Image (cartoon, rainbow, N blue to C red):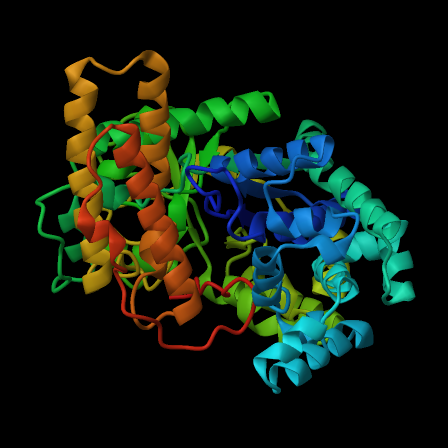
Length: 553
C-alpha cells in the first residue's frame, strides 16, 4: 500500500504595531475568512481524507485577537473599523487613504475580474485619479463603504459563498451597502473566525487530522544557533559581523517550549510533530527539537540531497544522525509534487489537475509499491490563484483519493510509527531550508545581514537589562515576548532589493517598529540607525495582496 502524507502549513507573521496593537496589514483576517475556513471545509466534506495541518502559534494568537475584536466591536484592524462605521462619510482621511492603498491587493484574475461591481469600483478610482487631485474629494462615503465591503467579499472563502447566508446575498446585491448590510457581514465573518480553532480541534479529536506546530514566532532557528551553518550548503555566503546571535540556544528553547504550551492549551494535547519555520533544519537545531520530545520533524528534498546524496529518497522517513537525542524521525517533502499543487495546477481545470496528480502518485506506486509520498506546502497562499479558491480542485482531488484502493492518506505521526523499522539513518544533516535547500533567503544579502546585526545589538542590550534585576516579572515576560516577535524569519525573508518594493518597505518598517519598541520597554535610548530603512527598495512588481512566497527549490 502506498501512503500519501499531506502537510498543510498555516503561517502569518505578527502584523500588529508593537505600541498600539493595531493591525498594520489585514492578511490574517483575510486568510482566515478565505483559506483557513475553506481548508477545514474541504476536510469536513471528505471525512475519509487524513492529513497533517501545521499552525504557528503567532498565527493562532492573531486569530484569537480577531475573534475578540468581533466579539467586542473594539476594532484594531482598520479594515474592520471602516466596514463597521455607521456613517462612512465620517471616515477620517487616514482611513480613506489606508483603504485605497489596500483594497485592490488581490490576485485580480480570480478575485476581482469576475465581479463587475468590484471592477467598477476599481475603474472609478482609476478615472478619478487620472484627473487633478481635487477629484478625489468627489468619492463619497458610499464609495468607501462599498469598497471595504467588496474587499471582504472578494476574500471570502468559497465555503462561505456556498454555505453562508449574508455573503451570497451581498454579492448578489452588488453595491450601495447599508450599515446594516455591513454589520450583518461582520457578524457572519466573526462567526467564521471565532470557530476556526474549534473546527480544527474537532477534526483532530475525531482522528481525521494531526495538528503539528512550529516554534512560537517562526524563527529561522538554525541561524539563531549559528550564523556559520549558512555556509554548509552555500560556502561563500556572506555573514553578519557578529560571530553569532547572543544566547541563541536559550532563545530557540523558549520558542519550542512556548509552541508546546500554546498547542496543548488550544488543542488539548501536546504536538507529536514540528514543522520548522521554512523547513529550515541544522544538526544543532535537530538536537534541540529531539530533546524537547518531538517525535518527528521535516524539511525538503534539497536538504536531504545535500545531506545524503542524489540517490536519497523522500519515500521513507529517516532516522537522525548518530548522537541525536530522543526518539525522532525526519520527513523530506517531494518537491515536484508539492510544487505542482503550489504553482502549476492553478492553471488547470480542477478535474484534470486531480487526475494528473493521481497519475503521478500511481507512477510512484508502480516503481515503489510501499512508498510514502510526502506533499508539504503552504495551506493558504496558493489558492487565490485557483478559480473558486481551489474549491473544484480539492473536491476532485479529495474525491479521487477517497476512492483509490492502492493509495491511502495518512498523518505524519502515523507514518512515523508504521515505518520506523525500515527507516534509514542520515549520515549527517547539512543545514538548509525548503527554499533552494539553503538559508540564503534569510542571510547573506547586505540588508538581511544588517538586520541581523541590529537584532544582535538589541539582544545584547536586553541581556544586560534583564541581568540587572531592575525589571519586574511582568516586564521581563513582555521583553521576552517582544524579543520573540523580533526573531521572526519573515523580517529577513522580505529584505533585499530583489523583492517587491511595497512588501520590502512594509516589513522593513514593521521590523524597525518592533526593535524601537523593545528599546523603549528596556528604558534605553533608541539608536538613530533604526530611523533609516535597511533596504533601498524592491525589484519586482507585486502581483497580489500577499506575495506568493516561493517554496520550491
